[in-house]
Structure formats: C-alpha cells, structure tokens
Image (cartoon, rainbow, N blue to C red):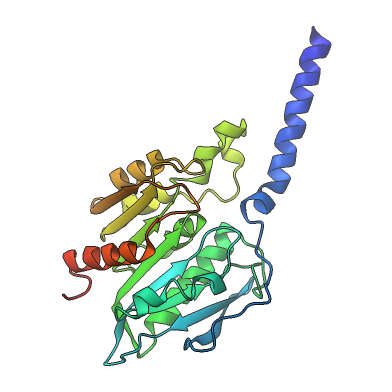
Length: 266
C-alpha cells in the first residue's frame, strides 16, 4: 500500500514539475512567420516597441479620412496568431473612422523576447503611450481591445488610460484553469488576473463571448461582467475560434456601444 501511495505521489509531483517548467511554452506557443505579408494597398505605419527585455513589432493603420486626431483601437490578438492576420478584418474599423494599432507579442513573428506577463505588460503599456503621443490619435479616445489571451494583454494597460475596453472570448484568470489540470494555482507564473483588472477599471467594458466556447466557457464572460461596474455582455452562438460569428455586425455593435457610452460621437 505504501509503495503504491509513494508511486502515485511521485508521478503527481513529476507531472506538476513538468507543467511548471513547460507552462509558458504551452500558454504561448508562438506564431512563426508566414510567407504572406500585409496587402500592398493597405496603408500601414510600422514601428517597434522596445523595452529592456523585448522588442515587438506594431502596425498602425490610420482611417482613410484624416480630418484630425481619430479615435483609435489598440488590439491584442489570440494565441498562435500574428498581427498580419488581423489587417483585413480591422479595415471594417478604419472605414468607420477609427485608427487601429496591432501589437505583436514577444517571441511571435519577428518580435523578440519571452512572452511573459511582465514583458507583455511593459510592451502593451509602452505601445499605448506611444499611440497616445501621436498627433493623428485622440489620446482621450483610445479603446483597448483583446481576443482570448489578448484580453489578458490589454487588461495589463494601466487602468486610467483606455477610454473603453472590448474583450472577446476572454478568461477571468489563468489560475481559473489550474484545478481542471490538477495543477496548484499558486504555481501559475503568469496569472493574468482579469477580474482584478476590471474591478479597478471604471470605464465602459463590452464583453463578447461564445455560448459554445469549450476553451473558455461563457461563465468567464459573466464573471468578468460582474467585476466591471459598466459592462455590456454579448453572448452569441459560436465557439472559441469562430467568434464573433459575424465580424461586420460585431464591429457595428462595438461602434454602437462606444456611441452609447459617449466615447465617440454619433
């Protein structure tokens, strides 16, 4: 009996040790470069966000009509994605008069560094500050938008900076998944506690999520909404990687949400 118990305990400790060592590789598998690049007819201002630990690519897409400083979306994508993949979808927003900044993660594509919560926090904060300093951006109307792990990334931006937040398919915290893997939550190196972030954020938050999401269940969206004092929840018939199911309609709902909360004008 003791031998069997020791064996089980030993196997479990080996399992925990393996997950502890590999958790960042599992959480951030990275996305290598692909042969395709941005379409040549899309105007993109490319620059780099540098910290002492990382150097990340950022692509700014201005709206076609530059009548003055524009409201702008800073976007962080989901896992195993790259900023190149979001150029065309976000043309829906530039056509509405928004500027868009796509920010890459450390270790993804051409970007350098390790994708840790600390490094991502520094990159997203510096990217936001760089964006706010541009003459063609209205610094008072910058919207932070993130999908899946990207929701955790934009929630790291200092709470007093974004005029609004849009979170799609976003989790409450990485530690919320630990128990389902029989992994001690306190050993999670990059918790991305989005509940705490929304408790501290006083601006409006739009939370969009799929009812059929098996990666991040819809209960996470409801918990995020409860954490925010000014939230609206859109629950739709989709999973994790096919959400939102109608991108142009979703963009229209984002604009309506921002108008209703007086972030942008009618």
